[in-house]
Image (tube, rainbow, N blue to C red; front, top):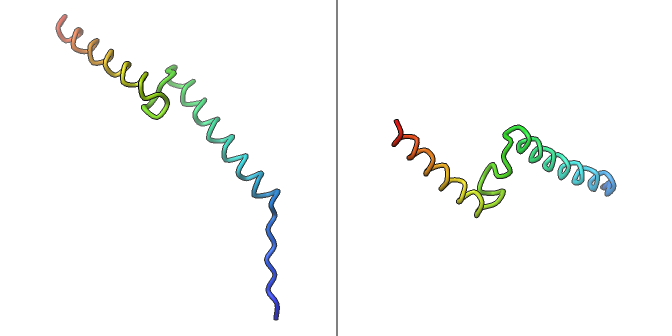
Length: 66
């Protein structure tokens, strides 16, 4: 009794390429839907920190005006 195992390398490579393409598409759609270049700290940590600081400043000034 023999056991045979076949692997389709081309299929595995295609699946990996498809996964990478879907990930890139998801990121692009997320950026387009929000209109923001930085949606999370994962995109650009420094820019996210600056944006968060500016948002906090804006919110505190808005509170002060009211």
